[in-house]
Image 1 (cartoon, helix red, strand yellow):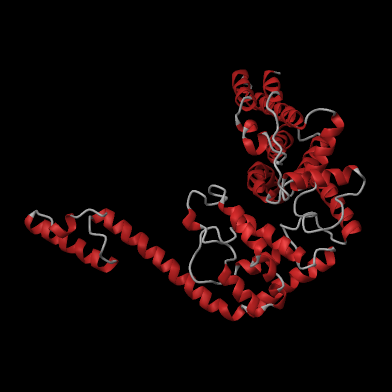
Image 2: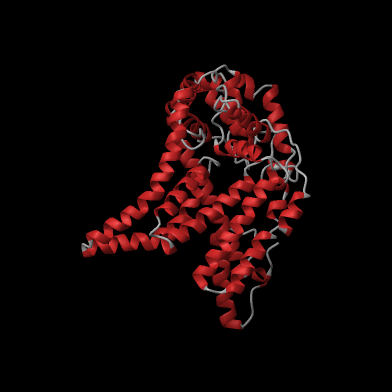
Length: 419
């Protein structure tokens, strides 16, 4: 209660973000008006649909959004404490877990603590999925309802963020005992036990697929696209990958598609040339300015030399979608799909002849990196000067060792410390 009281006094902050905060509010408003996610444009399927649904449910509760988020976080902390208690039987450890989670400073951070973003609910679902997985597969594996809840929660998680796949390795660790038990049952031909394990794993899978496929089906009905997010798969992901693979001279940190690569894409792909007016015009300049005002790792206001007046990768995905829309191809899902597919296919075909040179350049870069690391290691291990290459360092080391064995003295050349 004390944590909730503290959180209630932390006021939210209105931030205009056409691709973030304002987008979530717009999608939630469309849902509330019975229009699903609203008219189709470049942002309709750019982010998951669950957070707008959560905003709508929070409004229906009559409570402030940030208080609803923190209430769910506190309940998840209590779930963590009870799970630890059931696993260990140690009351003091369960109380410590609850105390640490409830008063963690993370919910008060700017990104999730004050803005209308997915981070707070994302943290809650991440922790809840891991805890319910422990309960279902290790403690309450005879209760199908727990498995269904786990699957539905996993579906909500999948519909919240684009990079939901990072949770799978953690879940794989939890599922490892079940997988080993399945293998043992197959090896021992214990078919009744095998059927029970498969049935136990089917409930979460059913809940997950039911929710995700339902959203995909509604998107198919509304927009003609059987997909819930454009970033995981589909023409946009293919086009982005194709553009990011275009070779260019010199490495630029945080830059996926620099001006040089854009020029090469325009030369071989008429579809890519349709984006030139936006990416190389005044709107593209605004994107470079937006990325330069943020600190690392998102921007480079602390290291201006790393920007090179380019659109950094964190912003390029949105600049690309806006460029396709500015070219008039995001009025429907089919038109956007056609242009993005053409960009992906055209660049793959037109730039295939460049792959060999790109691979050679990559090999040379890797060789230089390896040589630099080797020279650094040799210089530190044997006190040889930095201005020698690897062969000269090896000769320096051998000469120093021979001199030391013969006279007990080191060569002055090898006594120099690297600068």
